Length: 220
Image 1 (tube, rainbow, N blue to C red):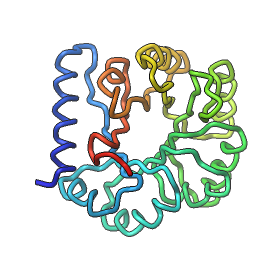
Image 2: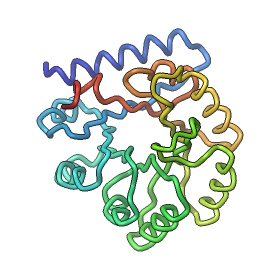
Image 3: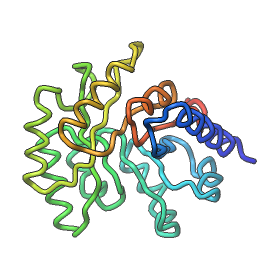
Image 4: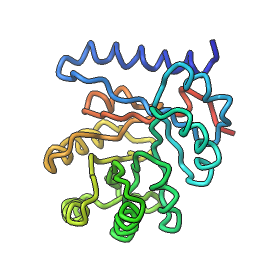
């Protein structure tokens, strides 16, 4: 068995054990295997096993890596988890099933335009910058509700919120706040939790966890 598949099965086991201990969580989160920077031979064992959800950071890398494979595997869902530049929106809307990083009206307008042009509707998360970190993308919490209304008015399919908590801080308080905001808005999905903190994220209602290094190993 390939090491990446072993690692994925271990994550699945950890998630299922966690769910058994959390009686209020009834549905297992989807595991997004974050395959950015890894070549396709690391990913093929997961595809052959039947895993469906994969995450990429860069549009151009994803086009080169996934265009052919997605045509051959209709069940694969591709998630854009990195920042999206407006000049890459056309290709992103064409290839990705989910966009996790919506963070501005300008980007919202571009996605809206391309969806109409291509007659496609994508599932979109609004990225929230709860830690007010200048180096990170995301809508500030105080602007979130107005931004959500704007997105709904232009008919974007907003399914949930996404966050990346500040490094070296207890992520639980950020996950709790995200859960509260999601409920206040009335959204069903939550994209939060990575290799270091995904079990905590599940406790706070995450429905999509983004796992990279715990599946594929360290990036160099």
